[in-house]
Image (cartoon, rainbow, N blue to C red; front, side, top):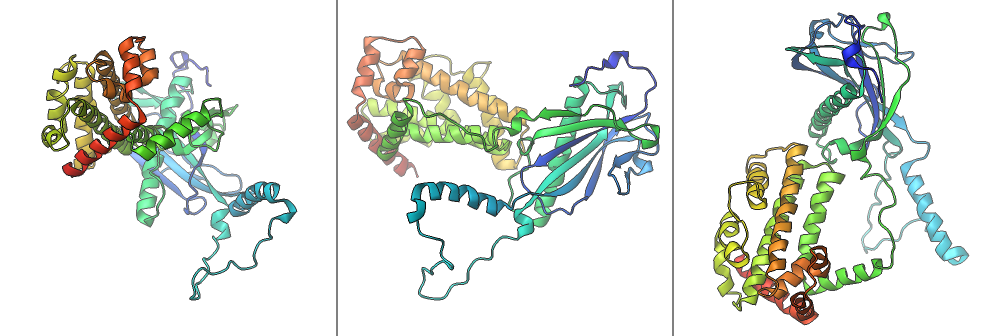
Length: 445
């Protein structure tokens, strides 16, 4: 994006600021032109008393308080734009295009007034305010272009190494400002995250004091890859296996297949992390997926050991951590020690402890912590599946359910024991285990 080498820059440069413009996913009711400036306890030097926070042709410049020009800051200004077409009109047009292609001329016309479904008169809902359904929000974020030199931050020229962290600093402050707005207004919008900014971000740099210069050329357009997941892009395919996979899912859901809950929780985990950027939810879903996976594995093994639902309750009277450290090694072998760097120890450190802080203290984990928690869950589930695959003769039903034929093939396990396990786990067996598991869950409640 920028090629300037910060090591070769001249010792005296005109102090600069970086400005970023981006669409924010959720239109906000903040008045057009409203700005919030937050200073940080980070000293900067070399900046002039006059720092222009925001410029706009034909409008008055917004200036930084000269008493605060010795500290790092981020200033956020909100702009309200108007769509060329009202959102409701646009949706109606898209919908009618398909409706009319299906119904043709024979499809009935729209009713002048929707018929009431109640014998009593009901009031019709008010249509959305046209201003609200046609507005969009653009955020403008300005911050000094600086590099750390010892205990201070000093002016520098733009470069890839500088602009990335500079944008991150702006988005972090934007999240704080939008949180303040949604809590002050008590409005229901998703938690502000980096995933809701963009995906296109336009950036430019200029002198902090407009009298010392102006905008640097050229501007740059970058893609916030974190925001691409939630865009209305065509997702998925329609391949030869699609319908079969959908049919299997619906069948397994009908019989209460235990893998359905695990799949759903894993999907919620990935959606929370990649789609919503919600680190709290990601950690909580990672923990829930872990508990369901671990308990389903243990239940499967107890079922195959011939225990009744009543007899199987005893291990579940212990906390999850205790079950993890006492119930699996004796059945599956392998490493289940709470210390070290293997999957069990990592899960305890990176997920279980973090989940308790989130659930019981309201802690907001960083994206790095949420990513580590997600990684710990998948590592533990792979470890558990690996052990089950090696114990397919002892626990054929549990291994067949949780490892699956595809999982055995990925592990290069193509043995008679694997074939026997797959063939043994019929729909009837799955139904009996699902019923047995449901009894255990009911009695645990």
